[in-house]
Every structure is written in structure tokens, then in C-alpha cells.
Length: 384
Image 1 (cartoon, rainbow, N blue to C red):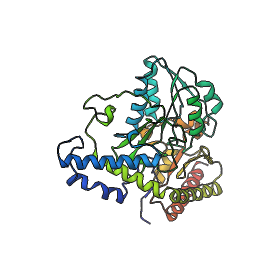
Image 2 (image 1 turned 135 degrees about the vertical axis):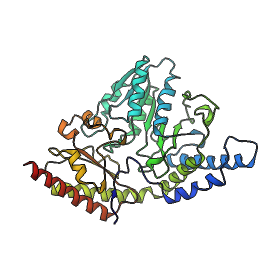
Image 3 (image 1 turned 30 degrees about the horizontal axis):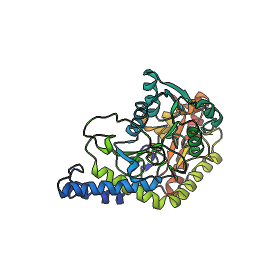
Image 4 (image 1 turned 45 degrees about the horizontal axis):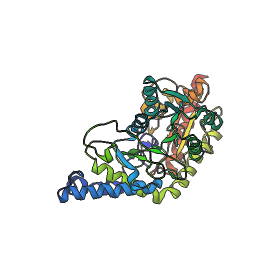
């Protein structure tokens, strides 16, 4: 075992060596512009991009023509929500949740400033959406419901198939930010009745700077407008020269996840539960945040009331952890996700997010468990 230990896989993942190997030729051999349609260099690059498109589509049970490549999930979220709004017709209502990623929450706020009505669906204390309230919130004026597949802080998995059914009963679209879920748990856009879905490469062992947006074309096609004007790339939805190496890396990452997900999910869930059970057995008064039944296999979010979080994290300097999403890591305020769940300020102010990943070992989990228990007990003794 080498120190430091990395347990912040929700923030980002290392590039899998197999992904890097697939990408390398794109820098020196298949380096052409995929939009260059008049020579072999462009053709080779375009073929590599289309192969990656098939790999991404296969992972979520989409068709090749339904995949639009972007730079990240935040861009995909913006394109899905704002692009749908530009094709709104007579619908002017959006439903989302207060626990969404900020790229969704802030997009909804922007549309609210432009005349849309926004409803924030209530949720239970475990982070699951209140389906009865959601059903009441969706009307014939609802354009879009945006609810993430898995929360980026507490890892809670939402019942997308039930949400999709409720949306389509009223002709509303379902968008889901699946940045944390894709490659960790099965996603089937047909079975779950998803219309728009966002993917981030760097959450699934592909490089940073590449993502994708699924846009339904089968059945009732979804119409969204581009929010970037230019050369009309990606079926006119996302102009800009394609990031061929990143796209190839994302495709390979999706292929690997599709092959290894069942076994890897079981392994990570067992390690996660080993850590959880050890913390609960050794420490009184800690609080597990979010549903344990409906949860990403690699996520554990624990609050330590009565402990100064900054001091605790400082004492764990040889373990890479976070107190919430990477986008909010510099914010000293309580977690907005936990606050939305209705927990006390003390619980919302003291969470540690443990994000396990492909390289996490049992030895690392046991070391982390011992270090956290030791640090918490020492801080409690000093405060007594």
C-alpha cells in the first residue's frame, strides 16, 4: 500500500491505462480533423469518433445517432435544459430538485429569470424524491423534469423509470444528470423512459474535457436547440472541433465499464460496507447521509457532529477525501445537499464523502477506517 490514499473518485478518476492506450494514436497518427471529409486523415479520425459513439450508445442502450459529444456533463446539462427551453412551444414550467448539481440548479434559475416557472420537488430525508409530490407538480405546462440519476454527494439513486413514466403521462421530457451513475450502475434509456441524459468522461476513467449528451431520436424525437453557434458539428447541436482523443477515450471507458460493471460494483459495495460497518461499530453519534438501499456502490457520506471538519480533514492528510462535491470544495457553508434533506446544521456542516474506485483495495479501506476512528476519538478527547 502506498500513501497518500485516493478516496475522492466522485470528484474525478484517473485515466485507465487501457483508455490511455486507445487514445495515444489520436495524438500522432489518427490526428486529422473528423470534419475534414476530403482526405484519409479526416476519414480515419471520423471513423474513430463514430466507433466511440457506438461504445457510448451501447452502454446506455441508445442508438448511435442519439449521442452528442460535449466537453463535460455541465455543458451537457446546460445544452439539455436550455436547448429544450428554446423549443418550448407553449410549455413554460420546469421541475427539478434542490439537491441537483449546480449546473442544473443554476440553469433552472437562469430560465426562471427569463419567465419560466420552476418547481423544486420535495424529497424524503433519505434523499429520494417524493413521487407523490412530483406527480402533483407535473402539469400540461411542464416542459422538462430534470432529476439526477445519482447524487454527487450522497450517492442516492433515484427511481428513473417511475419518474419517466410520470413525465410522459403529461408529455413532459425527462432529463437526468447521470455523470456519477454512468458506468457504476446499469442505465437503460429505453426502459427508464429517459429523453435527455448527461455523461462526464472524467467520472468513469476517461480524461477530463470530454462528455456526452443523449438526445432521444427513437419513438417521439426530442427537439432541442443549440446554445453554441458555429460550424454545425454534432448534428448541428454542438459546434466546435471535436476532441478526438478525448472522445476515443470516453468510448473505450464506456466499453470497459460495460464489461466490468457487475463484478466491480459488487466489489466496491462490499468495501464500502466494510468501511461503514467499521465506523458505526467504533464511533457513536455519527450520521450516515442518504439512503443505504438506493445508493451508488462506491459512495459513503458520513457526518461527524461535534467535530470541526477542517481539523478532522487536516488530521487525515494522507487520505484524499472531500466534504462534498468538488464544485463546492472551497465553500465553508454547510452542504446545500444535506441542508435540503432537512438535517441539522451540525450534520450538514460535518460530512466526509468517501468515494471508492477501481484501484481501491481492502488494505486501503482498513487503513482509512483506523485513521478516521483514531482522529475522531482524539478530537473528541481534546474537546472534552
